[in-house]
Image (cartoon, rainbow, N blue to C red):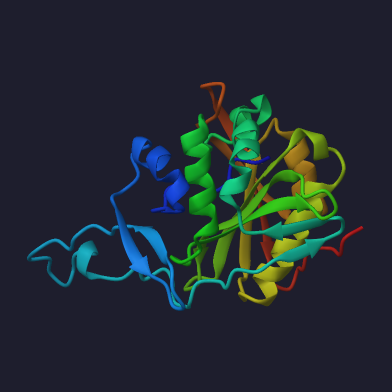
Length: 253
């Protein structure tokens, strides 16, 4: 796992069975919308526009970082695993991973502490509609067992760049799953999205993530001193790895 894992900060979509949990977790008010072909879906109600906002205000201006449509949700295959959008059905596995000591130490952006926050993380991860991220659950093809997640986030189509973050379940660590998943997402980001600069960062002491970055073709761009406070409540230096267009990730082993 590395410290660029996707942070849960998007308005969630949710199924009726999880409404009570979401409301107790502080989710936005819900509204009901009719789906094409029948049925309904509950969506987070967007905030009302601010009266009198001028043309130069953030409320009246779309996000200029995103210059293309959001990525279309899809499923990627990598060896014995599938990369697909997160599902609320796996929220207990997501919670267990969020509470893992190594995840807590090396991914300070992770805000998963209880069942409600795990559900919120799943819902935010599967909603790609704002175009700033594409989050995948890593799932074993044969058993369906949850193996972690990987996210392309901070997607900036105007400047053609994004960050890569991941969290890997203990039962798959040391088996090359993280490296294979990073390589697959990188090829998709470079090919389908046309991104030219991908960044992966990690605490300097996180040797496993350093190996993942190197094996996935990322070059070490430099070390950022005292980059951020990690899970041990101490500031750590950080390695910044970069993969540029034309320097494609190696094929899977």
